[in-house]
Length: 93
Image (cartoon, rainbow, N blue to C red; front, side):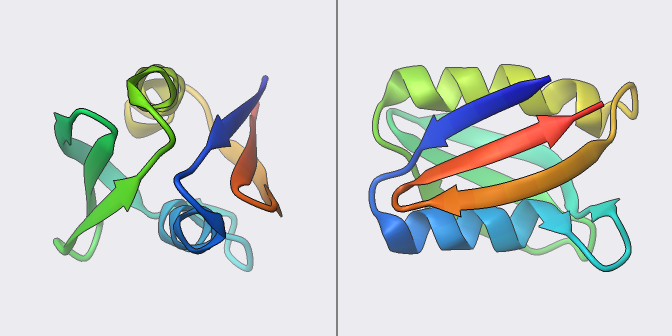
């Protein structure tokens, strides 16, 4: 399955990509979604740190949360992420 998430800008797209997936070890680094406030997503990582990511709008926040939940629940694994300007393409199996 593949999804495109539109972030607020290119910096937010780079931040999202670096926080959710470690390519070398093929590991998902996100542990949970802590909070959603309008177009802001607050995620917790496996190292217990919390990070805020600004997406384009609330629709993209909902889309990302729905998509990533099965990865957090270990039902699916992330395969790749790719940045396209202010968008992040995420693929899971």
